[in-house]
Image (tube, rainbow, N blue to C red):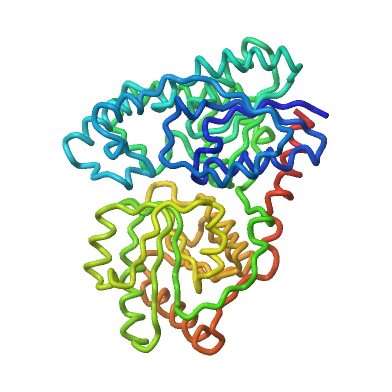
Length: 430
């Protein structure tokens, strides 16, 4: 079997979407004649926004996982100012305009480049050297965010002449909240320089969607498009092998973050109008994740706070049942310069086979996949009439049939197992 070392900061018991991509790849890689070794941070030293022990069940028993110490700036900040003041999820959990948050944003953007988890690199590189030599590993994969992890991969390639694949789960200097980090021009130039060197020096670059691939390609001269591969996120069929639930309310569910960048007001207006149109239908709007105080105020302004159910962070083990227990699923991409990407939640929405209400760019990669799978409909924020019409259509189906389903079966192309087959081909050729 070909041996590969996966270097990932996020690994169970860390929770969140960032963990699942490589956890699921590692789960299925042995089926394709690849033996993965995992290098991650020791949870005692890590700073995780949330934990999810239910993900540990997906770690294959035979996979070797190695953990190291780390120097975490966020633990230091948390100790001084309290964990509630440490921002995550695009600053959805804090008021980023408070004086303390402005100071912390400036510190993170200018003193920790490219990110506040760069303190793990020294430990990760030292351990990776040891593992590569001990086990005869010829290929290293780094995944970011945190993008500082790629710097470890670049150093290992330079020192040991191994094959290095850099996986970008999200953009680096084009992430939607990048301006919130208040970089000085010097810090921004340094950060973009690091990003460019990573892209240029990696043997292969993986991105999670076409638009992110084009972003990365645009940053280097003498482009080599052949070294850039798109492997999307996906869903694990094992997670959705559940019975169909009985639903007595029209439930719209959203999973993940809603911060000020997401601009959900058009949906709130449409939902408010829908309730007036169908006073006999019981409605519920559920959020599993994190919402900003601003978003809560906006729901109150639109008179839908009484049907709002906030579940907070839920384990991945519970998520599939929540999605399948819904009538429709809300997908919102943050309003930003790059609005064409895909959030990982989309693929689990597809697996749940419930209509997806997508708000953002109708020309995005996400919209194309929704259309390909006949899994719902996409709307811009300037189309409240179209959004209300589609919601009305869904409620009418609910009233007649009690359940609303979607999809043409093509979602199976985004199963974790099929995606791992594509990844294995890339690794074996590296």
